[in-house]
Image 1 (cartoon, rainbow, N blue to C red):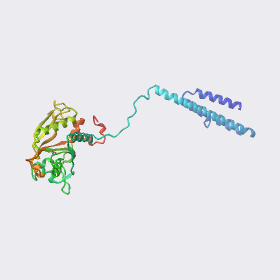
Image 2: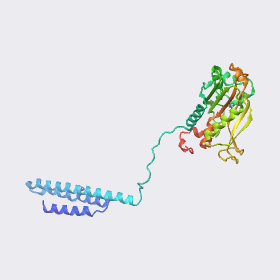
Image 3: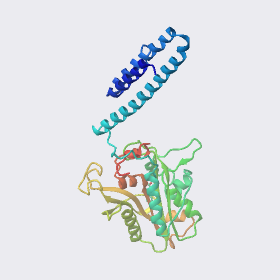
Image 4: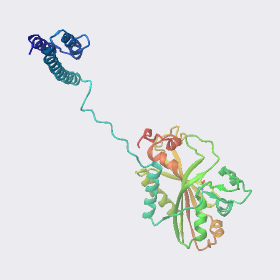
Length: 339
Ligand code: PHE
């Protein structure tokens, strides 16, 4: 090799080895391979050479350029690895941090609780019944001992469709649908959507879920009702939560009752959620009114039973400690505590 070329190569090798960061190395690259660099300058000399010298000289310069390029790349890789190692050393990136967990779909809490309620009642010999969401006045009201013009109809803040249908105000209509066709005895639950013209707030929705229960047999007592519902509440809340029954009025039951559980938020001492009473109402219920059995063609002298209508969303709230019902219909359920 032309002595000046080998000298140049020697210099380049040293300069490359001496560059101790990526910026310095880039300057070395520019000074040899750049437009105004030493190697370009050599190529410009080619024209001044004797014709037979041009070709070998050109080849030697190209070889030099390739060699310098290779050395630059190798040095660059080394410097990059060193920089990365230094960054790790300085703790910029903690490789022991757990990786982001992939987002996986989950069962909606309403679906989950429904599955549990169904499972619980299957164990007690109940089956699941259903009925239409748009009802007629007979199934939603009349047969439930709520005649037209009875003031009790107002309690249910009813919507009407343009065709005069009633988006059912409660799942009690399924009691009628089932009793009309049933041979007794009978044990059913009927979960489903209901609709009321409610102002929406933390504890009220205009479209909500209920789970109706109906047990008809001979010589059924309030004791059966009490044991069944206390067992349900214990199963759903996961502990033997204190309960109480209060008298209440629903035209389709007599006596009518409301089952309260001790407030899960304050454990009975009184808080804003239980309106400082220490109790939360969870399940309206009662002994089926004889008129209901009669309206469906059954003899109330022979058969009797109990019914309940659990506010399902409310139960989900209590079970998971959710303080606002609207969150159940929010896309971002992950923010809900306990899920
Ligand atoms: N259907 C009643 C309501 O929605 C609840 C209920 C059901 C009460 C069954 C008693 C028995 O208000």
